[in-house]
Image 1 (cartoon, helix red, strand yellow):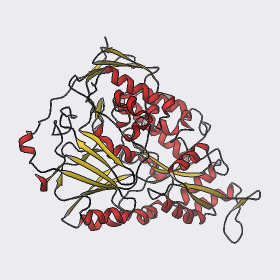
Image 2 (cartoon, rainbow, N blue to C red):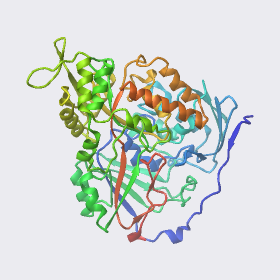
Image 3 (cartoon, rainbow, N blue to C red):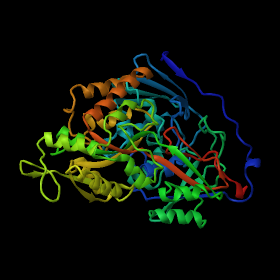
Length: 531
């Protein structure tokens, strides 16, 4: 028995009658997106856009609300042991995967074990389980998860699509190619992937287990969703205005004002919670191993000018390691690094970086103050590089912008080839700071800000306390300290907060996003013209 905590399902939402919601016409939603991912296997791949496109394919054990509460979803209830190391989930009995495989405790165990299996080389999901020890099938519809230690982030992790249950049958059938043939329990079935063109999902007519936060608890109103790969910003907007797509994710900043003023379109803005886009600094590679250099970089950055130049002011600037919209944000970090080029110059001069020759680059012991900035060809990273290059030169710091394709960029960051590398991550909880800054992740995809835990004695221990604390007041206090430490040690130079700007044709209604603000929920989405 696990008497400590128990969560039962809330009252079911109203299911709209099929006969009133649908006509004979087919409701097709086409969405323009800004790149094609390498894979959409949630347990292996880690591209946010990949999960945005396939979130409708999957369901999660629990659902997290905007207020931070956890509601049952595929698990109709859950209990936590008094020592917070054992979680028992009682599962729904009416759910099937898209290929007909029963959803049960064995499928959940298979999925969790798969996520942490080193052979699968998970880019994110495996690490999200923290001190996962094992899972056990108690009976067909009861699953237990055993942890090596209390882990406050477990429910948060299980509420995200990265740890969604997948069909064991489909994994065995497709093997590594499951990344292009995902099979879940969600409101939409994966239909096809046309390389270089689109991903298409089809309505799951048997769906009847939506999360309690949506109005439509049954099968979705849309028959089909297609995501078209349109890498060029102008191409996506043109496709919307020409009627080739009915929605655009990540509207180019230059087009937001025009579309918002046109009654033919609706433009919605959702702040994305989690880790803002920051320049992660490699403190193991000179000269960013020097605190004075890292602090000077922060003082020399005019972030307000950056977001104005790149985003026309539509995206807010960042101040620290959490976005302003995330639970537990520490506002005092906003006072630490005002734009002050003279202060940057003083710090460098005092640290022995003397003013140099005609090109303005400082020298110390015969070495030039040069930094390597590694950029992806997307997410405005090349533009950031050019702006950072221009701004830091005012303080005597030369920046070399190196643009790489995603696989090479990831490997460069893991090897520590960089001095500066832009990085951000969607997350609904401040606990994700542990994944970015704890030394155990210093060689993971999001641990690139450092290569060791030497920046502040006791910092890892502080992060571990946060990971073990389920009491909200306690862990919020801990993560406020974490945010100040990150900025006092200048492990990062924050740039901007992620923002989800979506434009749709005016007849599209009911599109909403999850607690993070990034992943779409299409349960209630409908198209007026086709009804």
